[in-house]
Length: 148
Length: 135
Figure 1 (cartoon, helix red, strand yellow):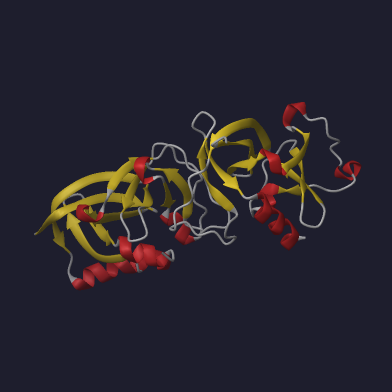
Figure 2 (tube, chains in turn yellow, red):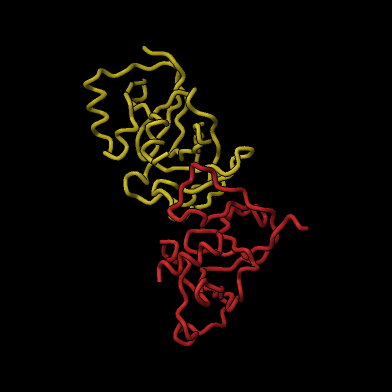
């Protein structure tokens, strides 16, 4: 068993986890302003209180599907970056866990191989909880994937 | 000196936008159910350019509003999906560096007006450049 609080969620149809320490805060999507001529995975910008306008990405945009311009009530995870906070729209927030069992290297590789090519580089490892397996999402790799 | 500017709220495809009112030479038609414009664009003398399509998205169905601008090389007639009125608002909040747009400067920033509606403020000069680039 490994320790360390992990936020579990689904995004782009994938069951994912990210260390809580990597998450700035969680927001509820209210209004979103789509931005013309932007990255296909950018759903738009939303106002995040004192952080002002922040970009919100939707992983489905990496698969070639257009992100929904509005998803009122969706949870947005805000990740701090050197350039400012960046949001990721979550399909479902599954909760937090404090213990999980890492998958063997071959099992993790097999799971990651099932992920769409476009997001594979944003997933770093995999683990199991009583509810099922999940892949670790790397915010840094995701930001690099969308050119930030 | 006023610290607010007057804007015209419009929608174009999926985009909620605000245009500085002083840069709109004339509102030729408000569109929608109140539209008075002929439905055949040939009757206008010049075919309007869809702002939604200019921004690379499909326009919404319905009778568009028509706006006349002074372009860099002549008048430009833009059609928008809907007009949502004139309002005063403070300077927009600039987009963060984490939002990249293929047309730098096209979006001046974000407004939350009127009544908290989130809109992007477009720079009309850059918009006219986009019209001419697409012509």
